[in-house]
View 1: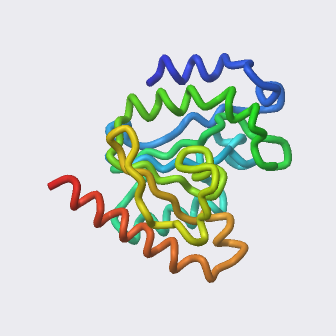
View 2: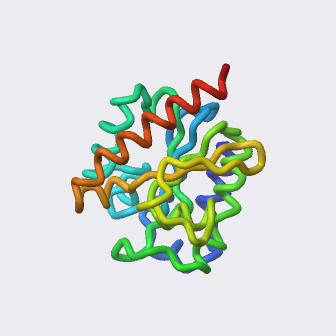
View 3: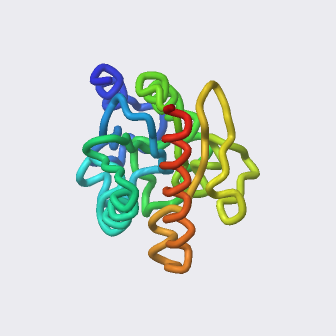
Length: 183
């Protein structure tokens, strides 16, 4: 994993490398059964070099803790992109394409049982281009021997607090599914 991280740090495949402060490779248990994947680092993530920090990260940590998950213990968190798009804009398709091989290799190395796409962009790239988080969150799709699902992005919840119970229920379902498939 360290070798892959070094390769990522040296990447110049898209223009984002020219504006990054840090790459945001990922954090957590490299042998985790659950991998959470966001779309791209934001400003706080770029500054700290870690995914999901700041207000969104604090909310995500709270939601995870409610079901006994922790980025320090039993999950891994990464993003599709390892560099921040300017002004936190959505990642361009060319940027996603340039960076996806790093994520694919992370998935292979971690070998999670469940991949959780955090937000629309990750879900549309990793599950289905037509995926609708509002109607399909908490459902599972099997691919390559793993289960994929999606939930609301914490930033979206901060903008619309009414989505929080849905995300809480999604995480309960994910925990139950993990227990079911680990028997």
